[in-house]
Amino acid sequence: MSPVVTLLINGAPIEAEAGVTVASVLHRQRPALRVSPRLQAPRGLYCGMGVCFECVVTIDGQTQRACITQVRDGMVVEVAS
Image (tube, rainbow, N blue to C red; front, side, top):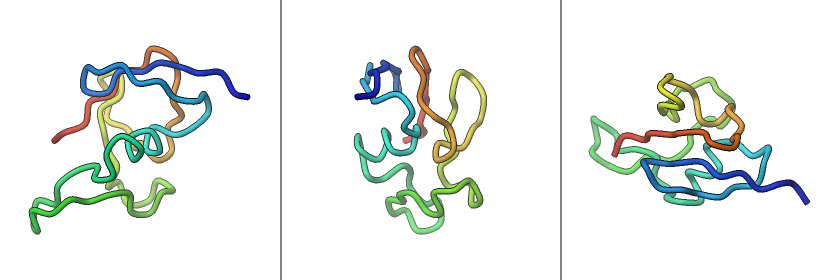
């Protein structure tokens, strides 16, 4: 069993298994990661491998791709609504 870490997502503490990606944690919390600016419809993960940049979030003050970033204890994630 992998250890559990705690991260903050938009100010809320969330527990996750160490080693999973931020995108998988976000998807578990809410399947739509953001709203398409053109279609005004929810969008989820797209490529899941860091190519499309659809999962860009702010992690510890830096813009990063959630699908290729592993969670770590104390991480602060901001997702635009």
